[in-house]
Amino acid sequence: MLQFLEMCVIETRSLVRGEGRWGFAGESQPQPARGECPLLRAALLRRQSAWPLAHFIFSLPFSSSGSGGVMIYFDRIEVVNFLIQSAVYDIVKNYTADYDKALIFNKIHHELNQFCSVHTLQEVYIELFDQIDENLKLALQQDLTTMAPGLIIQAVRVTKPNIPETIRRNYELMESEKTKLLIAAQKQKVVEKEAETERKKALIEAEKIAQVAEITYGQKVMEKETEKRISEIEDAAFLAREKARADAECYTAMKVAEANKLKLTPEYLQLMKYKAIAANSKIYFGKDIPNMFMDYAGSQTKFAEGLPA
Image (cartoon, rainbow, N blue to C red; front, side, top):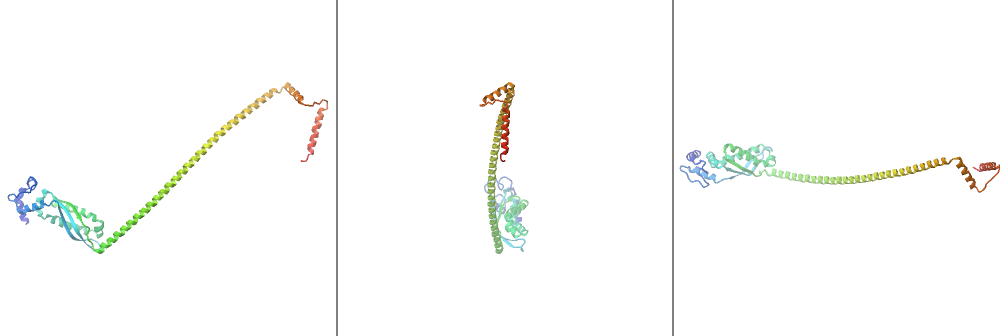
């Protein structure tokens, strides 16, 4: 069959000249060319009408590493690919119209087998499952870039693998416990958040009370300082008034003393003597008057000494 296709390719090589699709200008279906191989023509038309292609692979068994090599099954693997029109001729020539079997199907089985053989069931089923699609796509495209340029892998979608029922129940139980743990952790976070909120509220309230107390204390201090300044001002004013009054009295006394000193003349003293005599209602005359006053003073002294203490 391959030899026959090669003969057809040699006979129809003049079809691909870059003049348009399949060697023709425009998008209409190509008409049979002189000397064209009917089988190659049919293969080209078959691939032309299948862009893009979605291939499905069903129920592939694989063995994962660890736990004694558990067999798992991927129910469906979907590969979406398309051909660049300039590459259809060479790919069909080299790999026939069923190129996808050799380039995609077999490669997927190989890549998945490699992946499962180096990873545990836990990794394949849980931890690394979300990476399988992208890893398969990259692995396929890497080989296709070398082996079949122009064949592009658009997407790879792998269903969740089927595992033995007992293991699946264990995983479900584990997921249930994880869910409970997450719920408990979330509840703990909520309780911690509420406690933190209450603590912050209490702290804010305490800070508010402290600020109010500080403001009140500051007001009282300012009031006392104001009262102190007022008292100092009043005391200074009172002291100034008293000093002024004392200075005035001292000045008055000094002036009076100076005036009295000026008055203490013999003439003034004689005048005051006569005024004092004139003010008395009784006047005594005689030589014994001084003795009479002395006797009176002595009797008064004796009388005072005789009084009980």
